[in-house]
Image 1 (cartoon, one colour):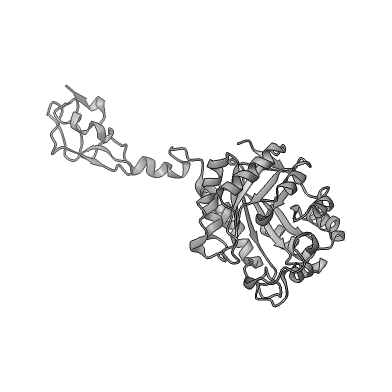
Image 2 (tube, rainbow, N blue to C red):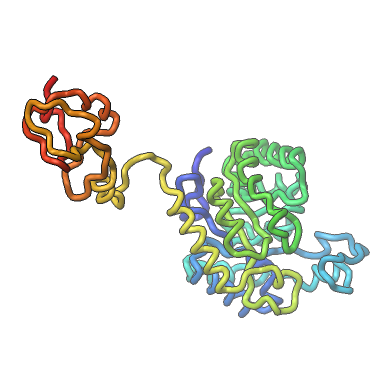
Amino acid sequence: MDTFEIGDRAVGPDEPTYIVAEAGSNHNGRLETAYELIDVAAEAGADAVKFQTFRAEDLYVEDSGGVEYLDDDRSIYDIIESMEMPYEWIPDLAERCRDQGVHFLSTPFDERSADHLAEHVPAWKVASYTSSHHPFLRHLAATDKPVIMSTGAHDHEDVADSVDVLQAAGVDALALLHCVAAYPTPLDDANVRVVETLRESFDVHSGLSDHTLDPVVAPSAAVALGATVVEKHFTLDKTLEGPDHEFALEPNELDRMVAAVRDTEQALGSGEVRVLDVEDELHEKARRGVHAVSDVAAGETVTYDDVRVLRPGELERGLHPRHYDKIVGKTAARDIDSGKGIKWSDLTE
């Protein structure tokens, strides 16, 4: 898998995790709230702020009924219509993101919305429920932008079909995000190991779009499993009205998530087995060597009673413990004081 670029950020296994702060529709129809969400995400250290761009008439059949999980008496069509983000906001949001040093992303749910976004976003984010909309995937692919695609509510065969469509249409820069389409997702249903499965099955970058309530556990686990992208919803206040606030992170929790991802990256390290600089003191003082535990006069034979495998502390460490049995039976070439680290030069046959 080659590293690819989203704007000025490299995305890949040897790069910092690309963190997407998902504002979604938590602006509640207020541009100033959308600006505040951008500011919060930038302050937390996210790489991108992502909104959602859709039109109800391009998303649902009009007489589509309700949805139980939202606990809202309105039809899903009416709920979605009330959450629409004005197209006129797009340039302003993109500019605010530039000013704050974060990428502007917004998930389009239809071709019309994608066309309004195209000149303003450095990559496409495909929502789970859109990932099997093959004509739409081809529409996005024609823009020659990287694609981050969530896979919730689809099985392995569905995902394989969508990957084939995107790659056949010329998408080389692709990241698949494991996602559980439950809001919130119980921690025991998070199934974060799918991050590995997606990467190994499709030979593409993988990551996590997380809907659990915990700000740290699933994102950190995903990074430990090799995620190159992590996405999580956030809000200014969980108690605000709207379907996505309750399971989203509040600003202090978003801070914790970003910090946990960065801490996890540091803790993972390079994987190289070596003596680290921070281990230097104990490398010298605590690793064991063969030391005399009694005085041995020159010409005497070294016995098991004369030597032990001990830590040297401030003294010079003796021979490696692997030589312990070889030392016993040798003749002392000089007087050896108790406590001395035994060297080959102290011995003769």
